[in-house]
Length: 142
Image (cartoon, rainbow, N blue to C red):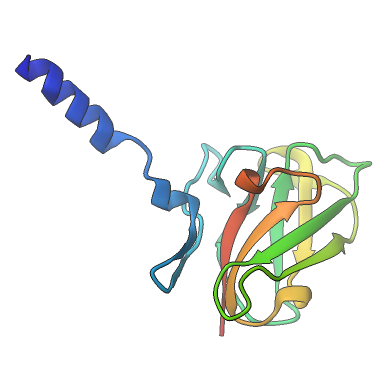
């Protein structure tokens, strides 16, 4: 019985943390930290950010995102949902220039300009038509 309890406790303590999915918790923006084998920040393996999930509030800043439903002939629109007050529940949608290009996931990488959300805050990026749980939380820093 003790070994069963010890095994269960070990399995729970070694499981992936929900906090690695990211979110706005207790007044703090927690960017997505869950990474796949290619070091892509992703929650479900369908959409992700290559590199850091904390970016500067600069209209010239870009992120490289990867999208499993993308490809060389597929365009992408991104929706960013604001998570922190006082602007929580607002969102911005914009089209990403170009088509899928080389990335850790194949020809499904996109350069996403940050100008539409270049004010500091906590945002969840989701591909248009994608599920909310596929989104990646990023912190836009001052």
